[in-house]
Image (cartoon, rainbow, N blue to C red; front, side):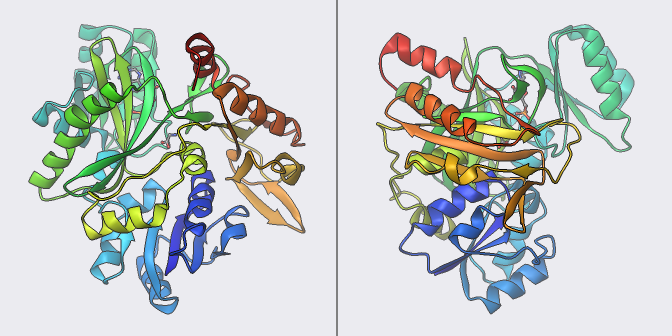
Length: 427
Ligand code: AMP
Ligand code: GLY
């Protein structure tokens, strides 16, 4: 079958790596793709994925049997709806179901209606009631813009002054809506479930590092590194998440007439009162996909097809339980703010020469045989190991071979997992 993958990030490079391995995949196209995805098939940078009619025409022309949508923007724009209406099989939620990611307010209302554990919250469109709420609740408190913000629309305010500044800033945009919520404490875990509209099967765990600087300091980003598995999420906690968070979400979405199909990615806080939902994403994570896909020992494509066909009950995606994966993001100086594009990156092939290392490309472009930086998060360097400590050492050894003075990375990815492993003896 010919498969079209939509997106151009490190996540799409990792998905291309997994999809191309499938015996079911005859030809893989990625639109727009990046120099990394080009190694597994054909990039189609000229295909405008915001033009749904053009994507439909491409699918007919190339006999595409499955479209896999990587990022959230085309999901929220209804690409899956428009493909399915034309009889084209597409993996991912419809526009209405993607509201779980597209609107924080929507998700919070669903949680309230179905008793899904999450932080206490209120929604605002006007300044005075929002400021009154802040004054009544005090700091620390969390302020979020309602819509998509690439992980950057959230301020965890330590003081009321910070919270007030965030509220004023976000509500300054005409028509803006914000959510103000209780600050949760605990360790964060990313939990992934493959959903067919009715049922869900767990498909792996990871931990992300959201802050830009070492020691979890600085502003939030799309993610500076990740590792998998997240052993802090024990099998008992995983069952609790499936029962108290994922299942009621699917029931609620179905009851509303907008069943959820695709990857439901729950960002969880493991609080003293049990796991609570911080937010949903409606797709694989980036950089979490870069640690999940290399550990996957099952064929990904039948799982995606089963979700599209409405029955994931027979799907059992297997991860190599004895292998840990850790990925470190290399970003352009200035990220998550403005970055300079066009600097030359050398040493990618040398860094990825070992069987245990894969350099996933994200914000890069190829020009005259060179790889140039072309975005904020530019590379994700993933290493596998028999322990998290080994994976971490390999990832940083690979990074040392990359010659890119204009880039930077966090030096402490996996620190807590390695410490836990040393204390507990094992992944
Ligand atoms: P979100 O985009 O909602 O995932 O938020 C981004 C990050 O902000 C999360 O990964 C957390 O680190 C932090 N965050 C969001 N909501 C809360 C909360 N209620 N309490 C504490 N931290 C939060
Ligand atoms: N790593 C966070 C995300 O994919 O949204």
